[in-house]
Length: 363
View (cartoon, rainbow, N blue to C red):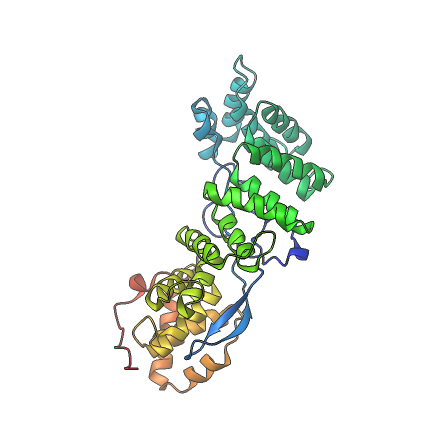
């Protein structure tokens, strides 16, 4: 599924391919996560060199309408099985029945928006979304906002998108609040952006937690509060928000605004690395090379460096380090990297190979 066309270049966003499975009514509901900070490359003394983050967002689908209204179970069940014609038939019965089921209307909007079981018809999709939105369905409001912000099958209208995201946000729709924050940020209103991000963050939206942490760290739209920023980074990282995992790991490694913890930093770098993040792979490679937070392991260092460099992340120090290794270790590292590489990203180290960790050198 394509990412949103509205790339917020003025807000310095970092775009990337989405990972994870899509849910039946997914409409790529969130704009790319903004990346305002420079990442730091780890060095033995804890200093760093800047390297721009390329961590992608993890788009999240709106909550399935069936989870909100159990009467939508039948059409959504058919939808999930790929029986789109049946889903449309069942949804029409609910949408046009005496109860005017808004969840069914939203599903009909999805079917027409995607051309599933029917010819794609965005105006018809919008008509169903608008009926559902008039009945107070926040998922329909979110979908309308996305159509307006993208100009996908309808004229682009950012003002209307903001209105729809605000309506959905007032009903607690977290993806709408997140999108609203990004649009406010694009317009130069950091205070309004921070307010939207904060509300979505409190609901538990991980991308909003990361974005709010960045604003708190920089004092953009809110008073600077490094400690609060660290707390929100931790919350986002705990939900596998990759950019947050990498930044929080860097903070933990360096002891910046949080208590220094190299073991936890290594764990987070590994989680990011195993999800295919090049920066996480690079930092984990350095940790293995130095024996910081993990046992020193030149072969694993070389293997993770290979995966990061295959994604275009250049690290001349690690490249030099790898060249100093015996040929047998370089060959082993190349084989290990190949065994980890899959179409879905590296698989966890523990699953790919047995333990081969060496003792860390004494300080």
